[in-house]
Length: 109
Image (cartoon, rainbow, N blue to C red):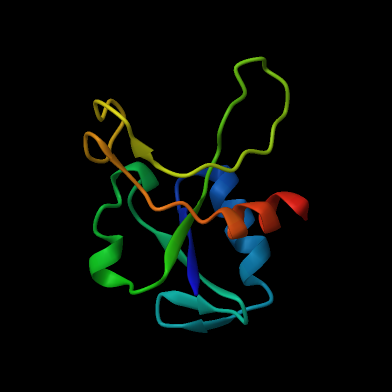
C-alpha cells in the first residue's frame, strides 16, 4: 500500500489532502483508506527524508504544486530523485523506485 503525503504549508497539496481525507478515517497522524493512506506533514516534501523511518509503506506519493514552464495549467506525475547533484533536496545520484502502475492509474483518472 502507498502513502499519499502532503506538506501542510503547500496550498495545492494541502487542498488535495483535505479533499481526499474527507472520505477516510483518522488513525493518529494518518488517514486510513481502502487503497492508500494519507499523511499531512510539517516539513516540505523535498526535505522529508525521514518518512521511510516513520512510515512503512510500499511507496510514497507526494501531493504538491508544480508549474509548467509554458505557464499552461498542467497535471504532472513523476518519480522523485536526482540523476546528478541534489540542487533542490534529496541525495545526489539517487532516484526513487518508480511505480508506473500507480502513475498510469493516477493519470487515467
